[in-house]
Amino acid sequence: ETGVTQSPTHLIKTRGQQVTLRCSSQSGHNTVSWYQQALGQGPQFIFQYYREEENGRGNFPPRFSGLQFPNYSSELNVNALELDDSALYLCASSFGGGVPDTQYFGPGTRLTVL
Amino acid sequence: AQTVTQSQPEMSVQEAETVTLSCTYDTSENNYYLFWYKQPPSRQMILVIRQEAYKQQNATENRFSVNFQKAAKSFSLKISDSQLGDTAMYFCAFMKPRMNSGGSNYKLTFGKGTLLTVNP
Image (cartoon, rainbow over all chains, first blue to last red; front, top):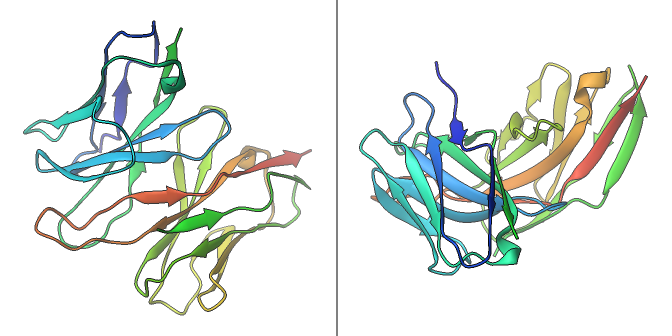
C-alpha cells in the first residue's frame, strides 16, 4: 500500500509569483485535505476535496485554490505569493465513504517566499 | 468554532519513564473525534492514537494510551516506557464529522503542539 506523497519537497519563490504543490493520496482514499503549518504552530485547515469537488474551506483567501483529479491526486495553487505564505504545506488523505475516517499525512512541502 | 489547547509548550522525560501530555478542547458538539499526532524532525505527521467521543473506553495503542474525560473536555496522552524515538512535536486534534452528500470527512483543528524530548 502506497502512502501519501507530496512534491516538491522544498520550493523557493519570490513575492507575487504563483506556485503549485502536488499531492498523491494513499491507495483507496478519495478525499484530500490541505493544511498550512507556519513555523512553531499547529497546522491550519485550507480546504478539502472529495471526488473532485471542494468539500469545505478554512479561513484562507481565494488566491488559495485547488483541484482534485479522477485518480484522487490533488494540487494546491497559490497566486500572488506573500511573505506570510512561507510555511510547511501538508496534504492528508482519507476515505470519505460515509464513515468519518482518519486523515493520513504526507511529508509536506516547505515553501519559502522571499 | 472548536478550539484545542495544549498548555505545555515543551516537556522532557528520561528514557523508559512515563510522561503525560495535556490537551483540552472546547466544543458544543456531542459527536466528534479526537486524535494525537506526532511530528518528528523529519516533519511527517504520524497518527499516534484516535478516540471516538461516543466510546467510554479509553483508546490504547501499545505504549500509548489516552485519558478521555468528555465532561471536562480533556484528552491527555500517556506515553509509557518512553523511547528516544518518541522525541517529536505532539499535536492534539479535534474533528467534527460532517455528514453530507459531499463526503463525511471534515477538517482537523489542531492545538499548538507540545515538544517532547526523551533524554537518554
